[in-house]
Image (cartoon, rainbow, N blue to C red; front, side):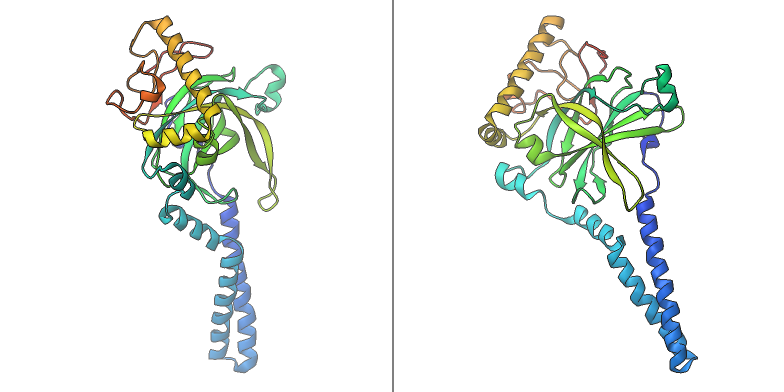
Length: 324
């Protein structure tokens, strides 16, 4: 990635909300006209002003509740003040912030956003952004948590093999994995995978190399449809300090998924030790600061690692390097 500011991938103005507010104001003005007419026929003068005020207030309130602004405000308040994920607390006993590692392996079958240049062999300059936060429903806004966006390097091959440490707070319930095409001016959003942390990651036993579909909304503001734009391949694992009690519950509930995670971890560990030697710095990164050769079940039970929030080092391989 280059040195541009992280805000360069912001999706910009939310026209849906702007149109909702404009429509609400329009209803208020219409109500004022109707109320003013009723007031004028009732005696003109002050009655006209009173009627216009009542009409504006009544119609504005209807638009505010029906057209969306009220729903957005309620969703934001719920995201900020609602209690933690009940399923996570009740079934897994996770009541605190925990560390989780997300490995971005690559992308498959993605659309080309280069337009006419694609006919001349131009490929997407792809990179992945991961955001952790809270979303009330699929149709509501996404509210990022305390983690800054995590981003991969740019790749034209669709291979990344980069691992990130995510600090999941009790109120965080969604991972948004965004695929972008980097351009000279701005970055094009190719698609987003919406991953529910509790049912899809934790209760799934930390899936390995699982494909998640990328979607992008296309069409008019009030008639948009979600179009599939590709697949992103991800793996997950518990980070440092992940509660041992919760590990045991997850292992019991999803034994197959947990076994696959252990096998993947041990295979990567063996490969790293063979390639770099035991405990060499930068060979196997678990949290962006220090590797460990401890078996998976012992990870998080000692002071071996610090729960950082940055990008983890990747191993040598297609599209890889040995960055810290």
